[in-house]
Image 1 (tube, rainbow, N blue to C red):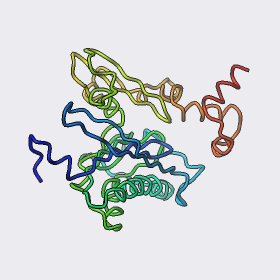
Image 2: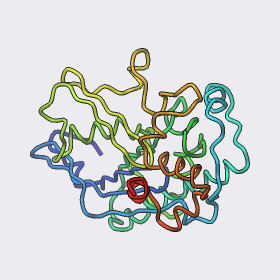
Image 3: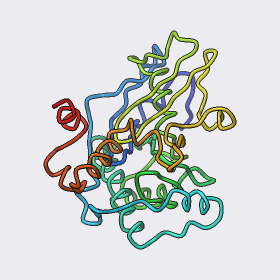
Image 4: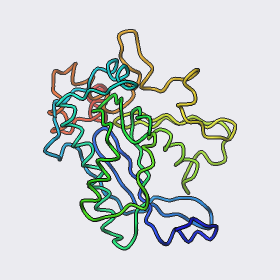
Length: 268
């Protein structure tokens, strides 16, 4: 299949966008307009919570970030608990893709997948992640799961994009995007983690290209090692409340005590 100027490729494949977060994976069928050249998220959506998988460890604590950064360019030594938690994190996106592909059994899927964390040299795995397990074999594992269910990808997962950079792409190329028409803009998206996106002089700038003058939110640390992300991300706010209240995270999640509820308690 050739992606020609007539956009015939749009008829032959199904576009799937995957957003991998710290607590769940969301996937959408993506519509592409040949007239405007813009993308739009459809209403066909599948979500999977990591906590729904038997491998998921409710009391999991990430490997020390310093160790992660030290090992990322040498040998990633996964702990047994980290490896187990990783299976929950990788099975979720595989199942999301499989469910979406079932809607279009006669088409091959072209998948764009965004995940937080620092990637392997080939960009297909994750070697450092602030709020979760490292998964160097992420893409390969997901592809095997899809193949086992007799589904076909149009091409292998080319790379795991930065969820932060993808936020910028979405704001620029989505029909509802807010970056279009701007020259200089900074995007801060808050969820379980934080996504930073940047547009300068009309161009989207990946944060990996700003290392010598601008740090990502999760890299900005106080002297005690606490990151700025922990104070502005939903997961970080919840973890801080857990420490002050002496209530474990699993109990907070069970009772649905999230940042909005924590804010209400703080105001009271």
